Image (cartoon, rainbow, N blue to C red; front, side, top):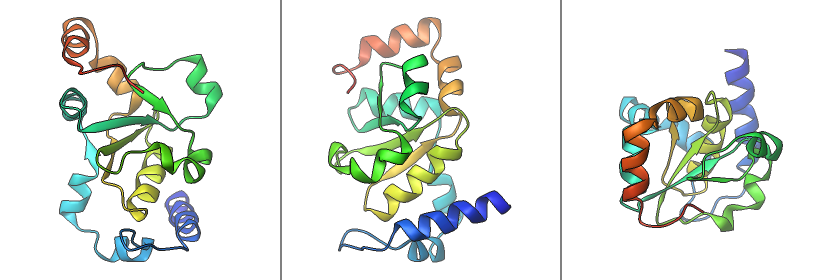
Length: 151
């Protein structure tokens, strides 16, 4: 609970400038309900469907060194600490799905992007869960269906 409070405080301090399409963290939290809780989580199959249809981008928000050690070719790496300065690399017309191995940073990134006006979710099972899901025929079928190369 203490870590969650620190995350919320950090996000609040990140959201000082608000544009028309953006919202404050306080507004996001006040309007947070069960539907929002469900909508913020992307299941592996849902992510795959969105990527195949060209409706989403998967953003790996781990540090550069983690990404270089291992990564998925379907994700773009924008480390969490670089995200505020790299928003111009994200397409507001697509769902941005944030991911890391265990969701801590992915949830922070998703919440930050929400306050900046992006339609966003985080990958519920994390990158390790996605790696487990994308095996054998599932991986083959997915790659065959992709409209183009990942960013």
